[in-house]
Length: 256
Image 1 (spheres, rainbow, N blue to C red):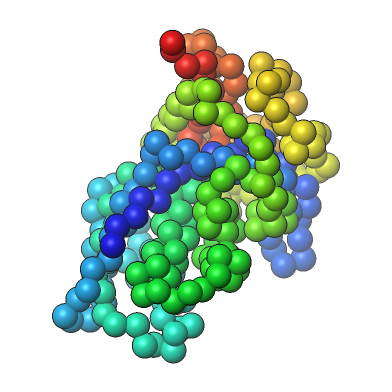
Image 2 (image 1 turned 180 degrees about the vertical axis):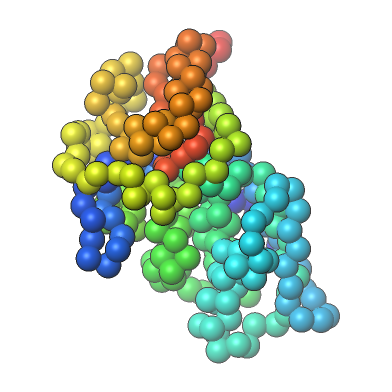
């Protein structure tokens, strides 16, 4: 069985509070970008369950990959009764880029195993399980525009529709560690209620839709400012860094 985990972008990202558990509260809009995808496949195996990676290089041990961790979560829930499979992951979404590639892989793996074995686990339980993999993993269980708060796991769907625009992604091959990025952000109140965001007002977004990670990451990597400016120079209506970086996106009018 084959599936294609897709990327996401953050439209606005306010870091509002440092929590006692070490995490941060935030407010953001998660928006799926389905043009950029990994490929994830599982097939029956005669030997022990294993994972094979291809495409972009993934740092660390294969057993630390979120796809494998997702498999372990389902196997634990099923008390070790899942038959052996072979897992194939082809990476196209860059890591450390703010595009949610690892989170998408983990979340899609939970969904894939649920469907493949016909386990009947409800999406709400899968979303709760996926939070053990990463704060933005639950978003990929729904994979529609969502306003998110808390760690990013508490979401409500919103009607934001950018299908009439082109979303262009730029990945500068700079890895930004999420933990380091959070250490450079000073939490504060959100400057705008992102639930009020409308595509009809997209020309004004740059006046009030802000990613709090952007300023400290740009200070550390000044070349990224040139990328953002280039997007505007090429006609972007709105441009921003996604997540904790380092990817940028520009929203453009579609060519007729």
